[in-house]
Length: 420
Image (cartoon, rainbow, N blue to C red; front, top):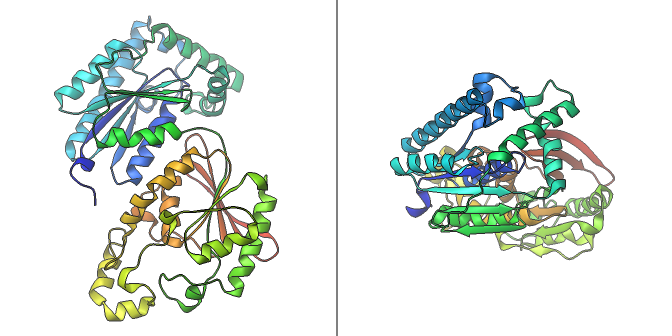
């Protein structure tokens, strides 16, 4: 359960030139805070511009010496800011992220003054990147697929967007006022500078921002092989694998071997025997996380669902009404599971090599919710079947999903989806 400090309303404002990862950071922050239980919304100025003026505007529109374009952009910026402040005022505990360049001291003063008048604490997040290779990759990978350039040839779009960046560069003033609260992210997490950061939420973001990167790598989620408890239909426990589960463990090892550079795959398990036994045929060191243990079923541990329902009908009715918040007597809820998974998520963000997580149904549902940017409440019944590998590949603005159902011989791809 979140305490009073953890439910404080907050505002963050992005700062930086185009193609420096502002929107990427804004969306990652929103995904993380929403997953932790803080209703978070991104107010992106580009979306406001496209809605009012259409997708494409030539680079001259963004020239600070163009009074028509400058006036239009200022109007849109204030509209988005007003919308964010109105949304934040509707309900305590919300977090707003103002996704704009905010590239001049004057523009940041306006944002700061409006937030102060509304009684809203504000932290600027400045994304700085001086690496030409990263900037070029960001332009190519994200901006060319942007709605702004949907109907343009790639080279024409690149040329126009670079001209747009040049306009912003002429007017850009980095944050230098150390009397204000800000976080600077330099070269995609190579360095993170925190200045006058107070309060629960800004401080909690620091580990995430330090570990963010854009290196593509797959994350594999799978439940352990079938266990004795699965065969008996009982909750929890620490039982061994069945022969069928052992066959899946061998099939999983073959799958990982054929999926790519096997030696680079990091393997994480829970502390329970069934995940350790599933990892054994991989023949490598694993990291056992207590945070990856299955949801604690409390006094229901070792019982079947039917036995629990018959013995505790009121408890079972409460679980059916709100599975996410329901806490097993002397046990845990899905909401509790998220809180203990926080360090796992931060470590996942840090990893640059593929990661295989061998876990349990409830725990993997909450990891899936984070990676696919889904409301956790909607994922308490998402399908995480036995003997299936879920491959999630983070992209700039989402996550691509593929599922493989494994038999003792070969993997079979059964589904492909994407978030974002």
